[in-house]
Length: 310
Image (cartoon, rainbow, N blue to C red; front, side):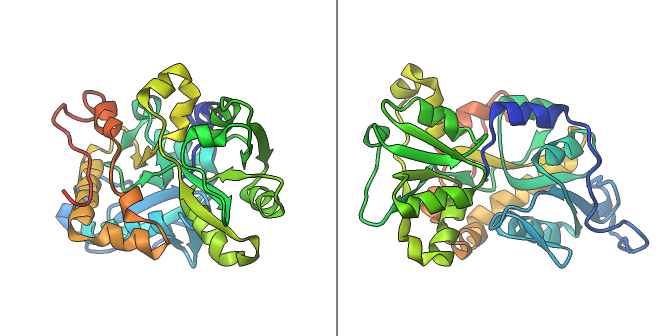
């Protein structure tokens, strides 16, 4: 998610060398009679894709040895098309990145944000979706722009990059919590006006905690001029996610990206976003800077990011 992490967390993830706790062992249950095409993808175990994942419903969670949630469903669809068996390994966010960068796993999923720094240490697929700037607000309240947030009580989770954005809003007061539950509790109690969290987390809370009387709003992204004046406002803009792979996994990355692009075209991606309450118009249409950020960095100058309605 979507999860947006602070620069400090991201850097520690890149440097961390940790052991990824296996959710399932490799044993003798590896697939037999793997096709030459599947074997050529170069996964650590032919026919198997080992996935580092942190439980973060409804994006990722592990149930019965399977990854479920939006990212889990996308990967399961792709893996089936490629003839791969998914084997999750449960860790934390730092371990997800470290497992990829040390090539102890084939991939990590779960709202990992693309960045120029991270792509130096690994490979990103084409975006399975774009994470829009979502706000949890009390019913009857409307906030559309950054100017609307001035002087308000704004909540988010400690360590998320929205902390920096909130601190840059004139007159706004930051309320940082250990987890999303605290944000929702204070939002429902009226101690917070707006909560900045990953959109599917907010949508899930609407269903699970109707007594809070909250709803999801999407912030109109700040303009380039506003971001130039206050760089921290950049975190109020949508960001592109990606599945993250080791630098050596070029064939696997290309194969997965091709399947992701096909899911935009055949309607499967929109179907999965809707399954978890997301709006395809918000999740599956890239902002203008998505292409420019990656062209000439980890994509050719002619690259066009996937989008519905093309």
